[in-house]
Length: 503
Image (cartoon, rainbow, N blue to C red; front, side, top):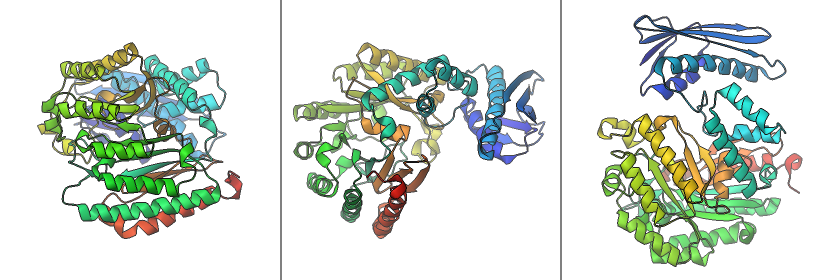
């Protein structure tokens, strides 16, 4: 789809125009010029005075025309950057409206293309805005549907029930520990995940660097009296390493981190069932870790083969029962809507199989075409569900979880997500993942340790976010882990200086 844009010369509009177009069309080419050969022309008239006034006219190749107008008071008391954001949102209103009218496709998330919609509602709650007014503002400012606003409200309510002090945790931190190895790499994956077979030298070197990071960061936290809210072992698949290596890693955690016994939650992803053994479960139990993920993604064997997961459906079920029998009391499972070759029948079957297990939490992902994934690079090999099928499957998930006592407690969205939908975490009440809430709502610093681990340092006073990422490949990490550790400690020193000290 080629879209000619007329009347918006400022290149700062380009990215938003591209992102919104991608909600409607799989491949879009935005031309910031008058091009009569384009599939559609959209002409804007933008007036900025006390009010921001935008008009848009869409004309297709058949000569049919759709128009939209939008006007909003301009807030001149904010920064120049925020003023331009108001202008961009006004343009987005008109742009989205004419594209919806032309295509007949309604975007329930409105003009939002960001990852964390619930942050918008949390902000309004923190500002003391009455909920009915906050909901109307979300509808007016972003064109979010009533259905999605209600979902956001359910999630915000549940998060505040699970973490009542959510808005006052800036002086604590959470820890993410990245283990960059998997048995094989899934076709949809862009996480740092290297096939573990044949890379034992890399594993040993990597773990040495990780232990160093844990000891140094732990020492800093103890020295500065900073508590840890949650710890999350992700990857990759953290259970790809040996039981002995896991044991040494958790021993390092207990010796290095402050007050580990009072950390609210420690999670270890055991997402690939083919990595779970009785010996590894024994290690988890030894260190009082009972929250794990065992991720089927699908209960159709042909699908698992197509996406490169080298375990069987039977193995998923067997390992789930093994974990349960060995004392794992909080198990999460993931399902993915829209995997290659799967439609409503296959997803309904996956929900029926989940019903036989009833994990404490179920995360329902919608397939996202991530730029660097095997699936995106070779789309012609992978037939996926239509927008309508994806929406129906999401509706099935919503109804199934509600009928079985699960409640939604976090959500996030991704670019190029099938059907412009979302990923939603459901859980039995009081079994929610606190880490998932913390990472999505960005209320506190999360320190990333290990290969490919991303840190988000949040200023306790201003809320400003500083991003810092460790390298994704083990060799680069192994060569420089001391330097990356020191860089993080320097940022922590600045954040938790006297002005923001928890003391």
